Length: 185
Image (cartoon, rainbow, N blue to C red; front, side, top):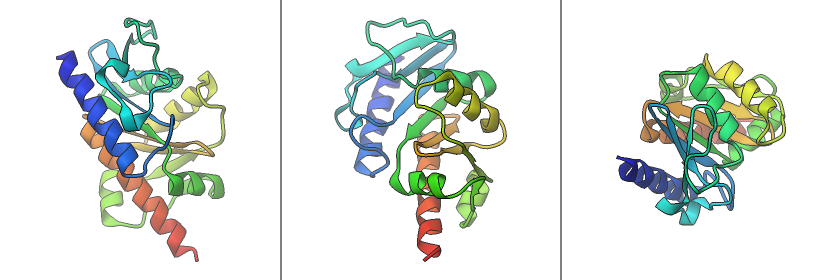
């Protein structure tokens, strides 16, 4: 089973890079199976991610693999604790979403029927340093009311019952941010 989970993380990591949702070392994906979290390794690059670059931790943050988890593991754990229904998380750095989260204050406006249906609302969390407990707590505090969150100067977090669902919600957030940006001109 872990081979299948790792293969999914690799597939969607590559897709995230191909579709411009993240670059270089940015972003990370995770899948929860019971008490185990499979997450991108620290320093891994989404574009050339391999199964050997998937770390495994438990819900307490204890490292169970020889691979160190992403520095954003606290963010993933906080969300999984807040939302037991969530089985996968996409944290990405898409450019229009970062611009929107830097220019707006409360929420990204919902423009399309698809965004209304699948996201309902897209709140913005004020800046907190990456990888910190403060960022994890801030995002977990609003993720209970939405499946997508923008983080000022940082990126996005989307959640789902599968990695496929979380990934496509991330695409929908970026589309929403791009439309908002183009409409404001």
